[in-house]
Image 1 (cartoon, rainbow, N blue to C red):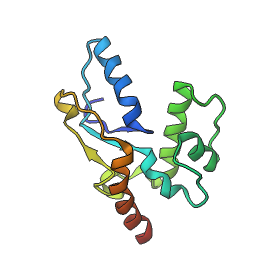
Image 2 (image 1 turned 60 degrees about the horizontal axis):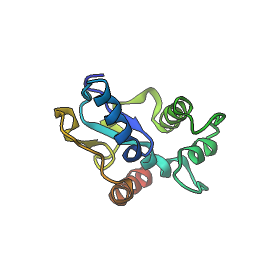
Image 3 (image 1 turned 180 degrees about the vertical axis):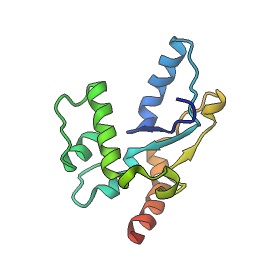
Image 4 (image 1 turned 90 degrees about the vertical axis):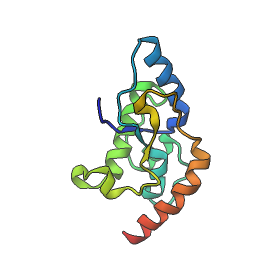
Length: 136
């Protein structure tokens, strides 16, 4: 959808598949170029989280995981994780996420943008998230 923010889990992994599927059908990404990787929300899931995998986060939050690792099921789990960790009434993303997590990219202009690797991006996000979590 035009102006949409892409929300996904480990977007760096999936972006290549998304881009190939769009090109295979002569489509162009029409989002606003912003993305949110739900892996960055892991600290908000609470203590005791073994890792930042989608399945681990969903189980930790009590979200059903039957059929995990199938595209539609995983998309539903990602949605549930995002909604569980988002504030009530879904305030605009800009109001509750630090700029380090909510990124803007040149993808909206039709370039060959690809999200940066989560591992390197996570280092900067962790500091920003720590400030947000400790101030809450």
